[in-house]
Length: 332
Ligand SMILES: Cc1cc2nc3c(=O)[nH]c(=O)nc-3n(C[C@H](O)[C@H](O)[C@H](O)COP(=O)(O)O)c2cc1C
Image (cartoon, rainbow, N blue to C red; front, side, top):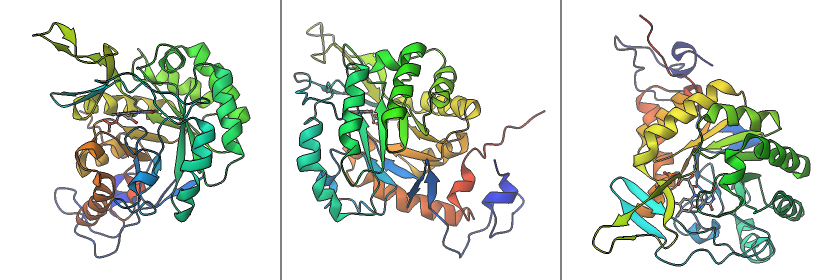
């Protein structure tokens, strides 16, 4: 991990507060991660960016770090009945139930138009109810062109089988990651569940079974009740909490995991500002994902990518990658 003096302020001098002066040099915003070259460390998160192609007129898909598709399963999934989204004090609850078109339709209809953006990193999020389903999806996707990496969703809190069950059980996680890595022709990112006692323990297991990178966190299991009707607001009763409410917890989990493993981490959870991104990078993330913020502003990912570049310039940061893990903990 670079020290501030070595890495961050390479093109600048430091003032009395340890800040670099404004650099005239364009900061290097590229990062590499699990064999991928990202134009920016900011990626759109799964479930909040469709299959990517829906955003082609809104976001410059090759200027952001990439995007993660909706979770893809072997068969199409209709998802839960509405209401399946509820606003909360500082975020939202969702219980979409992994609605998606299934792997065949994804390859036939959703993937080909993305060929218009050959430099975009298309990361496919994969979900299964059983290990065999995850593997079948990976094997089918291996035959398709235009995919940069897979993100294994072992952490969805909104389904009654699979999903979080894998991410919360060390033995099941180890078996699934091992099998998925053996089947995968592409870099394998494992998206961990935050609904566990020790995230560092599970991060180590995923890394030792061959994960090329980790994504964390997914949403936190939660619920909302309407006091007038005395009913749950979500048809599924419980759902996943995302948005600014979860940021401090997600940040702590990224910090703990980054200290436990040496593979790169994609940090996420409640990012809405450039400063949020910098916090995740300092905590040890190599890149970040932005999810709920795209609901409020569909251009959020690109806006934040531009904002992060300005932040680096105004803080004299020559290479954004030098922020990763550069947290300074004062000692007495
Ligand atoms: C409506 C919605 C749908 C989501 N669907 C998925 C999904 O299919 N697969 C997955 O791994 N994560 C899914 N997520 C989780 C996000 O990718 C992300 O991990 C989480 O929301 C935390 O980031 P945020 O606070 O920036 O939204 C979904 C989140 C939301 C809000």
